[in-house]
Length: 188
Image (cartoon, rainbow, N blue to C red; front, side, top):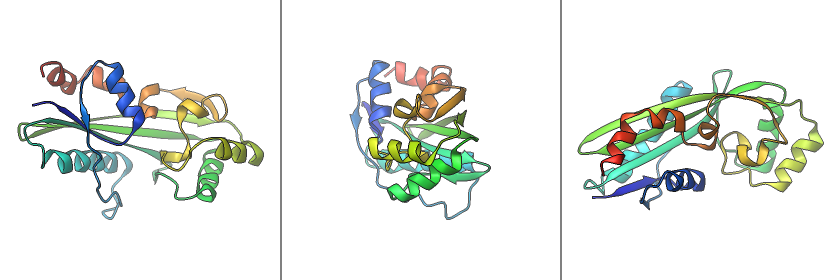
């Protein structure tokens, strides 16, 4: 019985490694469409739990940790862009505004599940079209919620962060450190 990270996110993998955990990775392949029109927090929790459940169903002797991250801009969910053009529009929309990054983390074990989430507010600078285009051309934006990676974008796009930095990366670390999930994983 070990730990499985149900994620393809290199950032979640790195944070979990930095915390000292040994684990295997299995990337879940689930439908992430919001067909039920869930609110942003409910959607993140639902997708995080769906990923974990999908992997746990085939690995019930293990503990399965899964997560999801989205952008909430005025109640609208912004996920990963499908093209550079869509990425440009997303970043342009977020320019000179504050949005929330919501990350959920779920643990499946012994026919039980626990989910936590956190919300971090991020304010973008007033960005010119040239700055946006240069950012898109310089970094991989297609597999990132909101078309940006905080580690690349911090000095280019970001004016202010209010909350947990690692939550923006995709792992609600502050909530994790105070959670039952951490206690359970420490006892593996």
